[in-house]
Image (cartoon, rainbow, N blue to C red; front, top):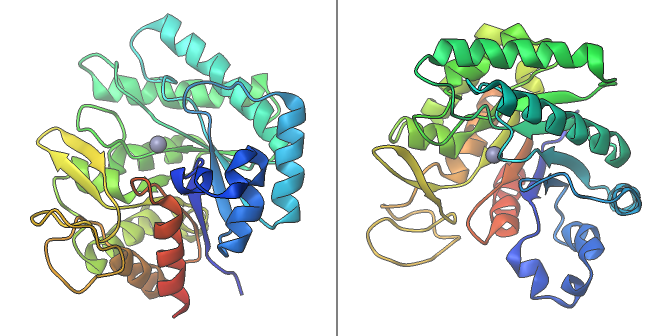
Length: 295
Ligand SMILES: [Zn+2]
């Protein structure tokens, strides 16, 4: 039977407060000691990792049983109405794919982004076209690209748009950032049932196999009229300004909640890779989700 995989986005701040934090490559040992299973390498400000560092990370990740995924740079914008931006974005994505091959990463997450002008549909079509053109230009091997749900309403990347991209590109899979979905829909992920509805929709539109390969980002979030405002930690309260990470019985918690997400996974019988992006507490959030799952 498959087991769910829980991990962190990037290097948690708490890692640097431990003796391990003196060397970044100790992250894999540290995650293993926390009984975590994955790390999303954040190339959010550019693909800059040197080859020998990538080889070292790949080998250490393997040694400690840590699954690696990759977040491509934020400035990748395949749906832009500006051809130059699209071309540059495409080259950057190719660099991400090349690095992923060295790291033995099978999932590259990227933001569909803004800058599409006034026509969302045209932006979406550009993304699909560019992604499909990649296949002829670079050997993807078994890499899948994961367009992520956008946290702001003016960004491409509603649930429907992500599904549309995945329908149009056979090596694309959904990255469901539940917090982004919650923020852009102004509070839609308040219960397990609402999360289950998202999972069911993916299965209905894309099939069970693609649902099983769907990637998740899960953490609570604060939002405004325009969408995402700031990541929160599990247990953070909206009214009292009080941090109590493992206290899930009280009200006024930022959503989505770890308990609701895990309940939804079990209901739908899903064992995905889940990356926690909780504010300064990625590893605590990932451990929390894992402990709820296996309790
Ligand atoms: Zn992201």
